[in-house]
Length: 515
Image (cartoon, rainbow, N blue to C red; front, side):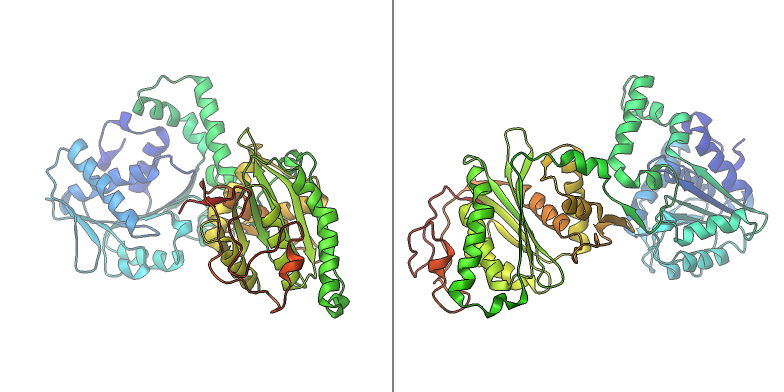
């Protein structure tokens, strides 16, 4: 029986009915849940049912505290929907009060408030509280402390969330309830994705979308939704909080991708005394290695396909890795060449990058690591090859979050073919999900590696994702040698000399990028 929250039970699934009953029975209710199963929506009904009644009948204010204020407007809209459609009330539009809280007022004199998410936003409030996505709240302990005082004169606290790591205060709150540390009027419950499906979630989705339900469609839908979550599936859907770091790619997935035909790892490792050689000796050494180890792979690349470059910079302690890929006729990105440079000076690294860009067919785009000391090489490369197709990237969590999932999708969908190499494999397995963000969490432990090939491949995939248009390329200004001497005669021995006004039009049908 729903008591205060009286409504046709057909609106809700069994776990939602249980949540409504818990909110009337206990002072503190905590739900660890799967994503997108409608518990916040259920709580919006509870908020409308609580606020619409007069205080004499047990009604009171209801406060919604989210991890971010923009969620408050969505919750208040759902409350207004229930008030108007289910309870047939005439409602005014919600307004912001003087403390920047969104307020929906009922004729009973009670209101539903949408808070900012900060603990101080709840200070001085009275009534029932919903803390939504609590594991993602910046100061859950502070919000809980503020919420506890709000219910002193009546009301309850409901806390619902998906998980966000095993060390999160949300996990401690659940454990405290199970251990009896939050009093007798506290309960913790769990609703997994499988629980919700078993109790009618997908059937309800089919009704909403006017589709016919079948067991086969339900099984396929569940498998598809779980696949989207990737390595976070147990946390997002099965209510299993993960340790701080979770491996992002499976070894079997990466090994299946390592089938690039005719691929080569071109490695160059220099000793410290290399810098003591004369200028011409250094370039003879670099060009000799390049012609022997790199050019044969480039020469075999298809001439009618766009090519891309992704790079991760390193100088002494870390490697520089340059990944070269090209389009195929089956929407794959093939990676025939990965170059690894160990203890190679800046100028020679710049020279190698320029030779690669000048030699690969239809050079379309590149993304280079411009973090720290890599910035100079990145900026020079942008200057020489144009901002329309080259980006010097300052690595950040935002960039990882945007582009690591694309790398993973290419690998898991069979759309990225890589050289078969044990160290590249270990670099890719070094990607970890750290507090929800995929990035390099540990090195492979070999020769100072730190996931270098993984970063280069992330940049390569990001470069290949950009749309391309045909355009000639000209340098932006007068050519300047990197060591203030006539090194350009050594740079591209396969070309005729270049004039001092710039590189001129590149003859190999260069491809630039749309803005």
